[in-house]
Amino acid sequence: MSRITLLHTAAVHAAAFDALAPEAGFTHVVRPDWLQRAQGGIDIALRREITEAIQAARGTVLCTCTTIGKAAEEAGAIRIDWPMMQEAARLGGPVLMAYCLDSTAEPSEALLHRAFGTRDPQLTCLQLGPRWPLFEAGDSGGFAQAIAADVLQALEGGTFGCVVLAQASMTGAAETIRAGTDVPVLASPELAAAYLLAQG
Image (cartoon, rainbow, N blue to C red):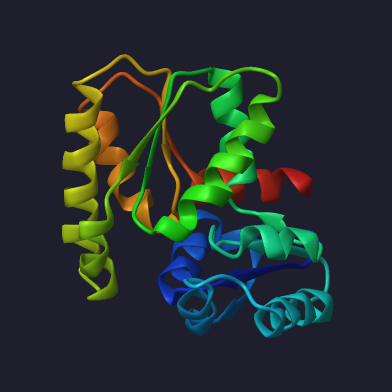
């Protein structure tokens, strides 16, 4: 397998990918400051740092942060949520997309529309910002449970073709949601890891 470098804005994602594909031997670059700085928009200095990190890496580069995903893609990286959005397009809408950070919304929506092409994803956005402090506090279990409960409640209010968990941090909620619904639930780390392994 060719060398693969993963850019993260939270260390927890490095462990998650190693667990998903222990044979891959991923190289991890963790920069939590990038997400903090990107909340107000990606300025020239941050864009330069992201670009330099990607250009310095050998082999394939995957960016696991949705907020900086567009800037990373422009510098040559693969966005973690692209395989997920392609799968959402394959399944079809209506799409229920859950996210916590407002900085995630625009890039996620744009990527979903790109994957759907000329079709309408019939998108419903579920903003779960009040749950984010649980993740920031390191309470991954509580965060996953809260996200799962909110998504399952939202699913009761409509008919959906799939659920998109827009942030990689939400992947822990996927199994609980799947246990409570027949609607396909898409989590970006699982699909991105499978995509990277398929690239050989």
